[in-house]
Image 1 (cartoon, each protein chain N blue to C red):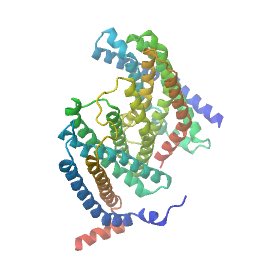
Image 2 (image 1 turned 135 degrees about the vertical axis):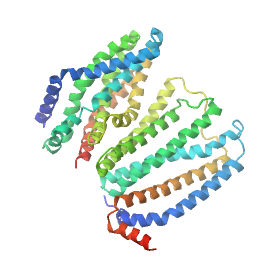
Image 3 (image 1 turned 45 degrees about the vertical axis):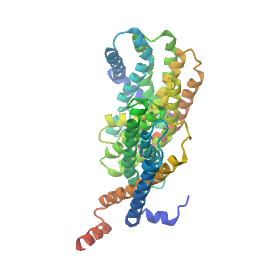
Image 4 (image 1 turned 180 degrees about the vertical axis):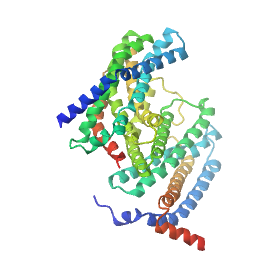
Length: 222
Length: 250
């Protein structure tokens, strides 16, 4: 079981490394969102600074959405998804490997670069750490919600817009909790409890997510 | 877990078709009667509000629609659960036929709320927790409808939509509490339409009557839609053939 897990994880990471330029896609997309938002709002540092955390979060969310279609679709197209569904190893374990690889390849670079984007938007210095922490704690939950939606749409005719319609309403609580944490930090309030809440969400997502995602994948199998 | 026999019988399309056909007219008549009674009570008998005068009367459309939009999602999710656990085909169909009705009630809630908000709050839209979570609910309904239609294979689409409905029902309360929390973090809206429960009984009973009417209408309309969907799905089968032949000959 663990061998299958690591084999799949290694395969996905290797595939990602072979197409290195694709790795940059979510990053420059998020940067573009920040750029366009700045152009729309105007260059005034005080105003931008107040919105910086929110804009960065939205940029990360949209970049995740863009990358999500690539989670299961290539595997469905070349047939390896069907092999996974019929493999002797339990499907939730395999799904866990795939989502972990996705998180490492797509979300981690975004998390690392997010403070950079935010500082380009004049984020106040006190909000750096909270932003980074909320991103670290909230992205597992986002990745699992996204994986469930991607699994549901993988057999559908068109992915993109549909995926947005399914995923974005589900991410509302995560976004609210994350921005709430950053705001609390800005006002000098303790951010321990919202961070714990996000952490609880991450743990719940990591434990329920694999099973829900496996069910969703099997539903599409005829 | 064992289900009673009548439940299995109802799962058969021809039986359900006949059962729903017999029940539907009664539900429609009852819903229409209750609506008229409730509207009479609400629009004519109930005294004008001391603060909002007659403008408060939109409550008699707004609140029953809001209750129904949430109850409708619950009913849909129960059907989705039955469809996925007991693999009942009829339940799959009923999930898909419930979604547009629920979405319509949600839209009605949003529109009437916005019309009510204009004179009372001085704005068409406010990011109040209830408004926000109702809007999210609307998108959840739309997601179910869109997902079901995105598949070549109708049943694969229906099953995916069922699963999404279940994911959504877990999310609805979380969204509600999250949005409430979010609003209390930001400066909350100081204008409150209700200061809970302080509604006089002469204003309250038409509300309850109309809520029941909305329920009955929802179920009647749900059955009508399901009947049509069943005819479409089973167009080639004997019982539909017999039905259409019977119609043609008299």
